[in-house]
Image (cartoon, rainbow, N blue to C red; front, side):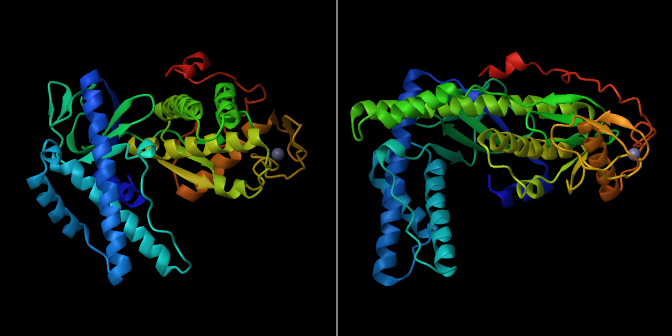
Length: 401
Ligand SMILES: [Zn+2]
């Protein structure tokens, strides 16, 4: 979904539910055939538009092309065997690509036309405007049955089928009421240190460390292979699969972390990472960690909001150098793990202090009303930070696909 679509989805309480479908080998073949046809359709629609634009300086509309599709379907049984909805979706995509082209042209410069798709990097997904689900399966005319692990509750507005190098995924846009939860005590989260996040309550959340060695091996294998050779093609496919495996592991692990945080807290203050990006230290490990925290922050936002809470992003400046209790500012070199305040004598963990500063700024920004537990400085028993993984978090399980 696009950003705008998300924004309007928010207003209508639309959420996306993603499931991995299981399909038979025959369905797999027909899905491939359909995707090949979608690629042909993309290329033909694009060619027609580029041709017309070059000759007349005008553009054909999506509506014109949909009318042509109806004619094609009347003449060609190969097109008629599938539903028209997904075929239209590819024409809409061509339309969007062309509108983006015109936007670039208006902005100045010489934009390239949208690109034709070679067969091996053809269309991989399509939308179904009126999905039919029966007996736990999505059924598509001319392709077959997509068995789903569970059918999402609520009114299904649209489905999208995505073929990835490893699996076939069905994404649903579902409309339905999200239960209104009671707001929890606010919590601040410090994402500043490379390998962990820490909550203002003292709990720590270790960063996800995903083994990237197989990915690097696959990348090396591709770069060693001769260009254009059959073996290179195979290695590129292996790289795509490995890439997706790594991505899925990261995503799953982050979802587990964000879900376990939001389970007990739905009012969360975090650093504004765009601000801290400006002071970035450009090492690889650091940038991977920041990307992860960035994604985690996004997940926290939508999960907290769908649980009836909210997330505020605060300026991270001086959060580690100011005392959260008395406001005294002192230099805190990176190696110093303990914040021993020169003003009031408070001794606490460096990151807990930062998380509490973030919490205070969040409370001030959001105007949250707070109970005795959430009041910053109410509990100074944080000299020994309570170090524990959050419930449901298990580093070993993060590698499961
Ligand atoms: Zn102090």
